[in-house]
Length: 413
Image 1 (tube, one colour):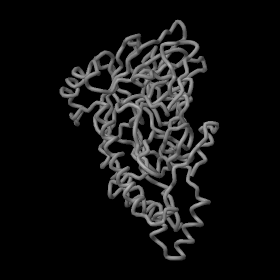
Image 2 (cartoon, rainbow, N blue to C red; image 1 turned 135 degrees about the horizontal axis):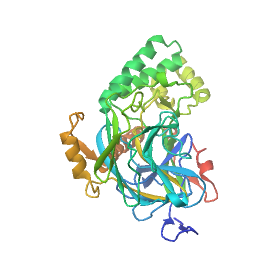
Image 3 (cartoon, rainbow, N blue to C red; image 1 turned 135 degrees about the vertical axis):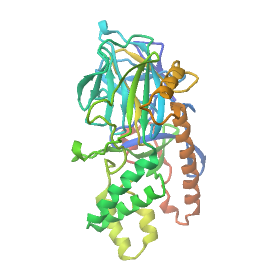
Image 4 (cartoon, rainbow, N blue to C red; image 1 turned 90 degrees about the vertical axis):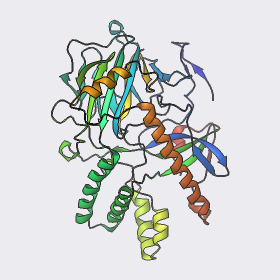
């Protein structure tokens, strides 16, 4: 992998500017090749860190740890996400402020976002997909506006540790909520193709099953999984969204509780699962195929060849999100041994009557959960592919030349 050094700073080098970058409708995961047409998901560093794929190119990551990120070029706000979502339970992590300078217009906004949040803008500036705090005034940023001063006497300063305590219902509770919604949709749906997808999704939810629609590609001598990324459903209104009623986001500064980002009406975190997010489904491709196979009563190939429209691929949830303006720099801290104020927050949790779930986890725990889930899926996926007699049904590893761009890579199927 080529290394490029920023003109502005020789302290942080960009080892990750020659990889396919996540953008609207598409996302990538690093793979390792284990055999002919067989790959397994892997990671650059086996730890929670900032995702090299989930950032604009002008945001440069510390190549040694992937935990510190700096906005090198003066192009306005830019955001990045962690490499693991928080999907359930009580979780704590910290942001370590490495460099902000209000006098020189170097700022940060810190918070959480869903996969549907656009990284070209600061966290909290979209509709319901993210929530954050402002560095100068500690205002909550939510639903495209600064609406609540969390603590008027607090500002963020260099070397601060900004702690985030997030609580979400269990994934089983969340699935149960979505199942009722899908069951109601099934009752009223008349389109056979849509009904097929709804029933398929309901079965996945009932079996707590994740599913990945992905293809393996080779890009600049490395292997990646390319899959469809989720986007917001365009016609949804705020009243259509489902609140996760037991959710909250509490903010700490250097171990001291500052305030709650969910202490006002209509600021519960929202459901992050389909049908409240969607992929860019190729209806014109799969609808004719579905009816052709249905006419032939070929249900086995319908399940194999007709891609899912609704599914949870394990990447959905709330991601730690850092937004930077000008040459500011922030580090993501997710492992309990590195969390400077973990014990203070744990004591707060144990003493708080408002927090029912006392089982506090660090972000590294959520990362390990995701890795185990992905490994199990990879193994099952390999077994399924090996059992297929018709190799035309297996998505091959595609070779991309070094001259091809990530945009070209997205066209591979």
